[in-house]
Structure formats: structure tokens, C-alpha cells
Amino acid sequence: MLSLIKSFLKNSSFIYYACKAVVVYSLLMLRGIIYFLSFLIPLKSNRILFRAYEGRGYTCNPKAISEYILNKTNKYEIIWAFKEPEKFLHLQEKNIKLVRVYSIRYYYYYISSSILIFNDFWSSFINPRKKQIFINTWHGSGALKCVGLCTMPHPVDKRLYKMRHSFGYLICGCQKFKDIREISFGDNIIDLEIGLPRNDIFFENELLKSQIISKVRKELDIDSSLKIALYAPTYRENFAKELYGLDISSTLSSLEKKFGGKWVLLVRSHYFNTNDSEIDGSVIDASSYSDMQDLLLASDVLITDYSSSSWDFSLQYKPCFLYMPDLDTYKKDFSFYNSIESLPYPKASTNEELMNNITEFNYEEFKIKLIEFYTEFGNFDNGKASEKLYNSILNGAYDKY
Image (cartoon, rainbow, N blue to C red; front, side, top):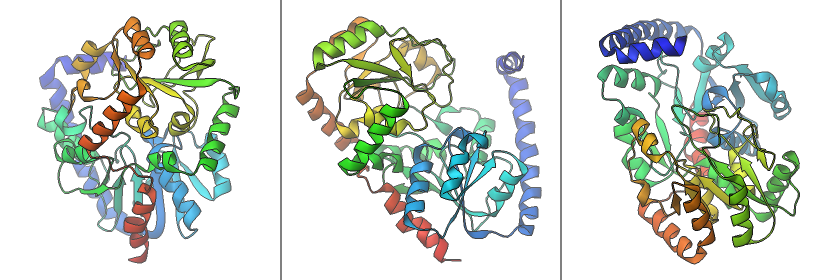
């Protein structure tokens, strides 16, 4: 029913934006009230509040930063916000405090934390406090899909968006992402040209990487003799509960013929989509696995579409293929900063094209294109993102109080 009402309002543009304008002005009034009330709650200098994907998991850049801090020092009070904190009780063993997102306690920590580290957006009705440090890590890189302000032609939408994205620092994974920051997120933001903390994992020592890979195989019950192909389609506005027509049998057969060995296919849906479709017995549903970067590390081949996971995965210089059967439809929902053609990966819109791309894959040509791509986009990833953030921002933030 709610979706029908939303659809009706969008089709009636005047009513839709009139309602949104009321929401914006109401939020502005609420922001003012809460801002003055917040002075009754002192900032705690060593408190950091983390959130990833609106509280859906312990993952992505916030997780990488949190883990680095915990391994570096015990001087910070670490708070993590989740939709279902009961699923993350094991984190308490690391002295991480848990809070239910959007609860009263959550807003108390939100207002009293000196540092907030999210990978999505802020609460639109809470005005940032002057001494608070807001760090948005975002959840993608590569400057491919248009996000934020450049997708919003109406000023009411732009105003609401800015209210939810009024952060002080934005982590950039590459120069091209930095170049489009202002048209996507606005001005008065400090860019951190450090790469994505979640990608530090790909530059770790071989022992640590092998331990993570073993953990993935154990949790997903994958025999050590099997090679892993990961299929990870990105977010879609109108999510269909299917594997977008991917021919699983032909895919596994093509991989075996080209690269040798026996293969297993993992399927991972986007955090903002829920994959509750029936999964074929020859594949493993890895959507509920806690960390996407672990899966990328453990996989030998990635099949994706418009996802920034291709950028992350390719830092290992492993084969990556794009399967985009809905490209024309997808372009109606999303626009791009840079064309799909600019990506260095073999591209397919049908199963036949995908199988041919796998069969004809030339690693040396692929590697050359990948190096040129990272050079053109100005890659910042070098395995030091968490360290740089800690040394330049977090450590200094603590010492200044």
C-alpha cells in the first residue's frame, strides 16, 4: 500500500514536491530544536559512533577503520549501530558497544560522539555540532554511477539530500571520484585522498590473507580443491528476485574449460536489495556472509555488472567479467559519470557473450588495460587508507580536546 501511495505521489509531481517541501521545513524546525537541546549533552572526546548501510551489518569501510583502531589503541570508546544488534553480540568481546539504530540511545550516542563514521548518510533532523567530526567513507569507488545531487533536478530534493549528507570529510578512492564530489555531494567538504579502508585487505601479508580465505571457505562449506567464482550484481531500483538470467551451468562449464579445475559459484546480492529468490543447488547464496571484501579476496573470478566491486576486486589483478542483460533498462533508473565502455573488463549482455568472453579471455591484455584504467582514474588505494585516516584525522581529533 505504501509503495502505491508513493508511486501515485511521484506521478502527481506538484503534490509530491509540495509534500516534500513540508517535510523539509518540518525537519529544519526540528533540527533547530534538537541543536539547542544538544548543548545539554556534552561531547565525549574519545567516543566514536559507527554505522554501515543504515545499520545492516558490521562491514565495509567503517568496519575496516573500526578494526584498525581496535588493533592500534584502547583509548577510544567504540559504538556500533545496527538494525538488529542482537545478531552482533560477539562484537562485545572486542569491547564494542552495540546500539539499535534510530533508538533513543542511538541518538544519545549520535549527539555525544566526537566522531561519526558512516558509509551512507546522516540523520536529516540533527544539525551537526561544531566540534563533531563527520567522516563519510561512502560505499563505492571508481566514479561510475551517478549519485547524490547530480541525480536530483528538483531543488526540494537537493535541499533534503544536503541535510542528510552534511559531513565534513569524504574518503575518496580515486581522483575521478574526487573530481565529481562537488556535483554529487556539494561543497564545504574536505576530501581525503587516501583510498578505501575496506580495500586495505588486498595489500595485507599473505599469511593474513590465507587465514581470511580459509575462514570464508569454512563458513560457506567450500572444499579447498574448488575454485570460486563470485556473482555480485549491484543495487537495482526495481529489484527482481532472480539471478538476472545467468546461465549457471554454462558459466561453470566455461570457467572449468578456460581456467581448469572444478568451480563453485557464489551469489551475493547488494546490501540495499534482499536476495530471497530460490537459489539453484549448484550455487551457494553468500548474501548473508558478513563481509563482501572477504568474499572478493577468496574468489578467483568475479562476475558483476555496474557494481564498484569490480574496482575493489581488480586490485588483486584477477579476472573480472561484466554481465549486463538489463543495461538499457538500468540506464533509465541510473545515469553514469563515465561510460560503461570506459571500464577495462570484458562486457556481455547475453549468456552467449559472457561464455565467449570467458573462453577468449586473455590475461596479459586484461592486465595492461587494468593498469591503464587505474592510471587514468587516479587510483588512491595502496593498503594504507586506515592508517592514514587514523594518523591524520582520528588521532588528531582525540588530542585536541
